[in-house]
Length: 387
Image 1 (spheres, rainbow, N blue to C red):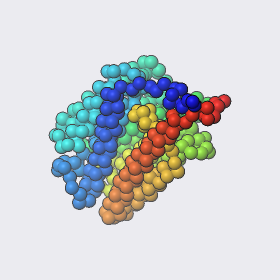
Image 2: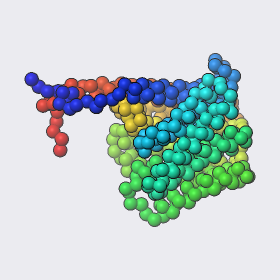
Image 3: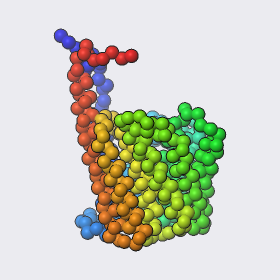
Image 4: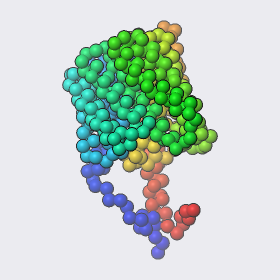
């Protein structure tokens, strides 16, 4: 009788509670992502049903803190493998769920601020263990998140907190990209430009807390420098020449870097903005154009690591990315020409891009599980030999 892979290789014994935790985690991320999109459409003026009146007001905190902050905290907690490290992302998830259900924003901000303090503790442990460029860069991002949460908690303008949150995500992503390409030999000027770009971010955030206009313009300079650095020196410059998932991820990284430069240019040109079309264009160039392009590119890598779910890459992964970029061009064009209707339709298409991304991801996970099942049941004698 032929042996199958499932008979020849023992399956890992995963406890049922871990399946439950992963399912709850996936459901929490999904609900906050959908809630963030829904609240954004409400904020833009689309007549949609809302579970509570304050949902439209928590669009930014729900997306940046409730979802992305929790995912980043969880990713790092998994990496250091310490039980205490999971307290931070848990508090952040609870705070995000509170925002979603209409709990007073002050309590949600307190929970999320406590969660961001947990991320600071995680990076304190990481930097002590490995004090190198990419860990220090991401640790500075964690400081920026905690600082932005304190401004939010204390009632300072949300525009100031949002700038600090942008610094958090940008430094985190840039640090992760440096970590992925850390074995590359870069010229000395690359390290100098990287150091300048990174150092300008916390400097601009501190300046913005005193003089918003000057700080915003300096932040714009830092975003331009870091975006240009990614375009010039990121490992995506090499992997874009490959095929399949490596090329797709590289296209996401490089196209997202262009949006970081565009967002930086808007900040440099217009300075402090607290509301209105320019504010909308600036924030969404950063948070949608840059951050979501990076999410699209990293999701096929992060999902297997965090949720233990296989992802099977297909060419249709490019569709959500294409819709994302085109819709953001429409939205920002509407902002710059002062057309509310164009802006609203661009925002609606932003939401459609994220919905397409969710659909494609679910299909890819399902196909990945099907493929894994086929491989397990394939007779071991029929498998190709490994070189």
